[in-house]
Length: 88
Image (cartoon, rainbow, N blue to C red; front, side, top):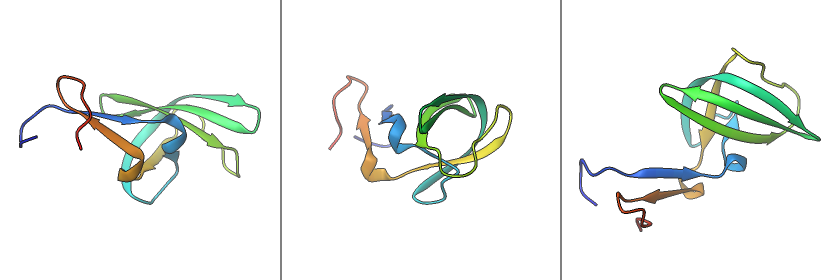
């Protein structure tokens, strides 16, 4: 992998934390919220990207149109190269 190479970042929705402030933090806007028992499923627009986050309901539930920080840890992500192979 060298500078300028295209990669894809893969994250499980359960590892994207709405309202999180640890690790890598991005600012976005909630596009939709759905309730799944004790969890909330969010679609969050961050620039031209749409991230999915599935988080336990513990206090505040974000609503459509609300600004929200989203975070994830680098250790919870996987990078794929242009051929779809994992970058180690």
